Structures are given as C-alpha cells and as structure tokens.
Length: 149
Ligand SMILES: [Zn+2]
Image (tube, rainbow, N blue to C red; front, side):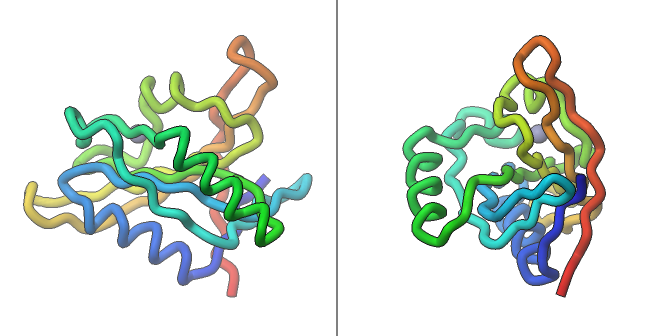
C-alpha cells in the first residue's frame, strides 16, 4: 500500500510545517483509496486546537473533520489520511500519535521540521498506514510515498 501525491501537494504539505514552526501544523488529506494505493487529491489545512502545547501534540476539531468530509464528498473524494509536523523531532510517530489514530486504512504523514526555534526547514517526510480493525490489533505500518506527476 503506497501513498501517492503530486509534487505540488507534497511541497504544500511540507511548507505548512515550516510556516507554523516552532508549532506543529496539521491537516486532512482528501483523495481515493484502492487496494494497493492511497492517492491524495487535495489537502485541507486544519487549525491546531491544542494551543496549550501546540509544539508536541496535535488535534483536529470534529467540526473540521465533518466539514472536510462534506467538501470531499462534493468532489467525489474521501478522507484518506492526515498529516502533521514534528518541530525539532524525527519524522516518526509518537505514542500520542498512535493513541489518537483511529482511522483504519488511512495514511498518517509526519514531516520533521528542523530549525533554531525561529525558522525551520522541512527535512524527512514519512507516511504510516494505520492497519487493523480495532483498538486491540491496530498498528502503524511504514508506507512508501510516491511522487507522481
Ligand atoms: Zn506526531
């Protein structure tokens, strides 16, 4: 199962984390899933609702999810994943990320942004597929990112 997105969307997703640095950014990915690929067609930026500790946790408000779902449906797209940044931390999921992930079959994209607490530059971007059917057997699987077109 790979994650496909255009160079343009990939750049946008990575730029978002540089803009919000030293805080985390987060957003929703709309697209289409098949048995072998998740193809991202659009990104929706989400506000970080956890302003108390926006540098190490992220959260997307339920209203934003519903709105994204509605917008996607109009365009024939589904929510296929989520992205966020890790300011001055590796592009690897945290326990919090894992505990807060509930969308099975969706991609969770993490970009590391390294900087000096004033400006940051996106370095690695990794994607993790949430596998399983419930909280008991859920797991993150490393997922290749393919840049297309
Ligand atoms: Zn995280």
